[in-house]
Length: 466
Image (cartoon, rainbow, N blue to C red; front, side, top):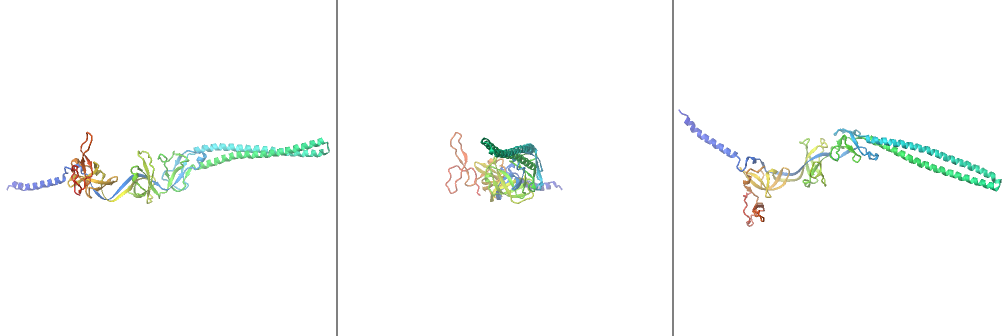
């Protein structure tokens, strides 16, 4: 028996059915001519709460801290600058009284040497003044005693001359009067020399005391060059005017006495800088979601507590920025000053809104459009947009929840059918004047359905009923 005709007879229907199935699958799987392969990246229209965020990078700081400062009296002893010769590593836990840093003692040592020489000279001047005063006063007292003896002799001579001739008697009285005057002069000289000695000793004594106080102050300041912790805590370096942290070799000046800080780790804040465009969106009390670069899984809640009124130019930034401080609500023992934070400041929130990715929205003639999937085809749908954030934008009209929009325009987007929103149709209007004048599309509101028909030509777009 010949089976070949029988096999051919049964194979033909099976082959025809298989080809039909393959053709159907290929028809559905093959992309439409209006949506090329490069436009098949689609995103759904989301529905739900929409938040407008301003994202910034910040750095953790303690709201309260204890300043660790150098010697407070350095300027009074004319020590205006020195260097940090050593300092404990940043993050070291210290107790009250522990040495945190050592300042270079060379400037104060030179001052101590100069004041020591001045003190020695003042002491020598004081001793010389004492000896001179003692000699002068001793001589003045001796002169007084001599004048007293001379007065006594003249008194005796006058007594003996009572019975002499009048001339001799008169001479005795004159000699007595001279002796009295000499005694009074000697006493006045003693008083004057005493006052001179007191004044001179006061002068050299004051100079001596001044040099002694200077040396004492210098020694006190020198002892303070060993900077000690005023309270227990963790050592955090302070930053200089150029943003660089103070360390070994950094300059220290009395008008900027801070060497380090001991922060209160239970009260932290994130210090960030916002550009002049976004700072207008911020206000005090706005909520902030904070994450740490050191631990991206940890999320912290914060509140905006400070917005600077004046902008500043930060290093390596072209535009002006404004300082913003964000208070961290919940204490966290793992937080450390200097950690980098990512701050998402919530500046607005819409509870129920439709949103699409920013990449899906294109602008043309002052109107916004999205390329929306309509079955197997694609249409250019006019949309009315609202607020936006870094990634998405609100769509008030034009799409519905669950619609799918293309993230990039299709290759043949020029021939894609356009669907407009009633009341927002772009119409064709003549452009007057100039030898290059021609008809161009001008976006103008379309007439309402109840109004008389517009004089302008009918729009090229095809309206779709929502």
